[in-house]
Length: 156
Image 1 (cartoon, rainbow, N blue to C red):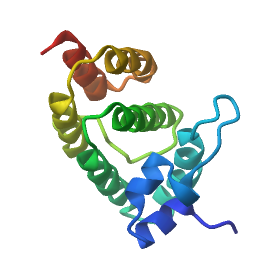
Image 2 (image 1 turned 90 degrees about the vertical axis):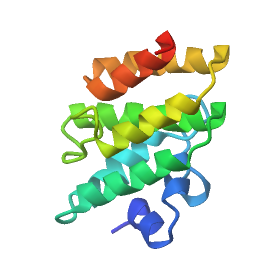
Image 3 (image 1 turned 180 degrees about the horizontal axis):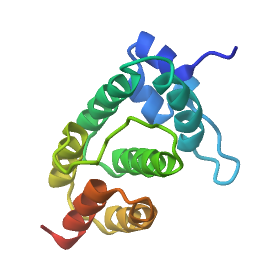
Image 4 (image 1 turned 180 degrees about the vertical axis):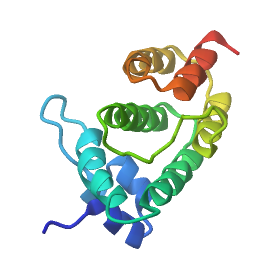
């Protein structure tokens, strides 16, 4: 059985590298030459979550920790939005069950995401990237995340 890279990242205290797609956690996307976030989330994370009780909460803890570690830069914004889009897409498809990043607008993860956007400065590149991902996230009924992104773009 192949090694579960999310479990490896937990064991090695490298979950932030996992969410960023750094080093051993990089998965090449032949379409654009960038890291393919969906492969790692739909495979390794989904298997991790279903490997035992409490694993969805453990994933949520590490995802929140990742969000809290981000700097308000274009690069980190890209990592955040790509992960959010994939998590919401996979939840809509029935994967990542038990991961409640936005079921309630005041979830721990939603609060961390909101705090990140409060520290992010408006720039044309960043706003454009947010608008691109917002379309994906809206489609997946991610109510709190959708609301946070819209509030940021409107200056609320």
